[in-house]
Length: 499
Image 1 (cartoon, rainbow, N blue to C red):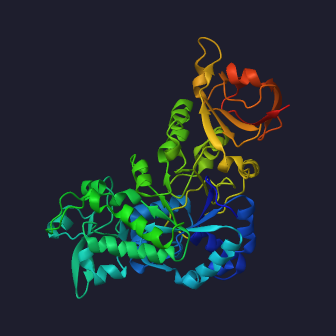
Image 2 (tube, helix red, strand yellow):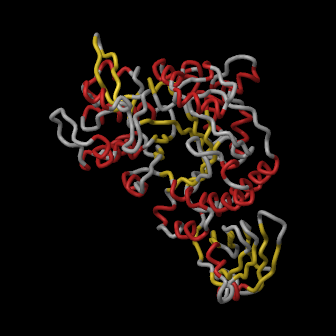
Image 3 (spheres, rainbow, N blue to C red):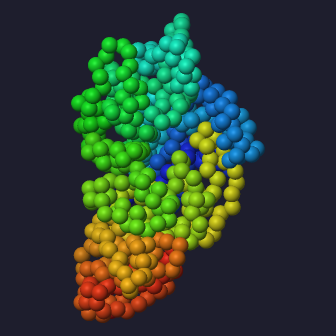
C-alpha cells in the first residue's frame, strides 16, 4: 500500500479498549486479542496509522497519585459516577519503562500485533514523553543527577512543584515535570535538559521505541525547547552551561533516529505558536490547535485566513475535532455546526486525526487515568455522516492532489454574509475538480466563488455529501464564480466534470 501525503490517523485509548474487550471475552484482554476484523475495518475505512495510546509500563507511584488526588477524583466522578479504585490505572504519560505493559502481553504481543497491522498496510504510532518520567523509572534511582534538584526552601514554598523522592538509601528533593503555566504533575519527575547525559539517554530511549513501531507522537514536545525550558525553570543552580538553541534536543535526536530508520515518523503535540519551529526541527506533523480553536469559535473568516498559510505549514499540520485532551466533538459542536466543521477539518491538507468514539457520537470525555468509561448509545446520524465522509476521503485526490483556497465575493452590495464562507478545490489532472464550499456561520449567507474551472463548456456539479446536482457554465465559474445561497452551517463537496 503506497504512502499518502495527507494520511488518516486513528487514536485508540488502549487501556479503555482492552478493558471493554476483556469484558466481552470474560477475561483480561491483551494486544493479542485485538481482532483482525478491527484492523480490517480501519484499513477499509482508509486509515494508514493507528495510535495506541498508553501501551507503556506505568508504575505504582503514579497510580497512587492518581488514586489519592482529590481534584482528579472529582474528574473521575464527573465522567464515571460509579468509578472504583481499580478503574484508576494512572496517567499513561507517567512512564515507568518504555516496555509494553506486562498486562497487555509485553513487547512480544506488540510485535505480533504490528505484524498483523503491517499485512494490512497499517502503521503503528506510539507515545514518547520527552519532558519527564515516572518517579519509579529506573533513571530516578540510578541517575538522580539527571533531574532538576531543589532544596527545603523550594519544597516549603512551592509544594505543588517539588517533591521528596527516595534515592538510594536517602531522599532528594526533585522537581515535578511541568510547563511554565501550570503547577507540576506530581506523578512525574522533571528531566534536566541542560545535561548532555539526559539528552543522550532520551535519544537512546527513542531508538528503543523506534525498533518497535513506525512513528511516535511526542507528548508536549515544545517543553524541551531551550527557550521554553529556560522560561519554565529560570537560571538553575548547579554550575552547568546554559541549555542553548545550539544544544536543542529535537534536531539532533531526529537526525539520530533517521540514520537507522529513515522513514520513521515524528508527530508533535505542540502549542504556543511553536508548530512551525518544530516542523523545521524535522517533525513530520505538528498539532494545529489554533485551527481547532478557530473551528470551535464558529466564525468563517478566522478559519479561512488560517488556511492561507503556506503549503509547507499546511501539509505538516495535524487536523482534529477532538482528541484525548480536548472535549468530545459531539458535546462541543451543535450537530449542524459539527458537520460543517468536519467537512472543513478533514478535507484540507495535513494529517487527518480521528479519535475512537468520535464516529459513534460519544460525549463523555474520559480522564486518562481511568481504564473504564461509561456506556453511551451510538448516535446513528453521526455514524452515518462519518461513514459518508470517510468514503469520500478514500479518493486519491484528497491525498495526492493539489489544494487551493478561493476568496468568496460579495453577492451584492451591503451583504456581508460572504465573509462566513470557506471555499477550496482539490485537483489531480484530467478535467475533474473537487470544490468544497461551507457557510461557516450561524446565519443564511450568499456569495460568489470564482475558481479555476478546468472546463470551459457546460459542467455538472455533483455533491458528494448529498443528492444535489447542478449544471453550470465553466467559463462563468472561472470569471464571475459560482453563486451560492446556503443555510447556516451549510456545506457542499462538489465533483465538477464536463457535462
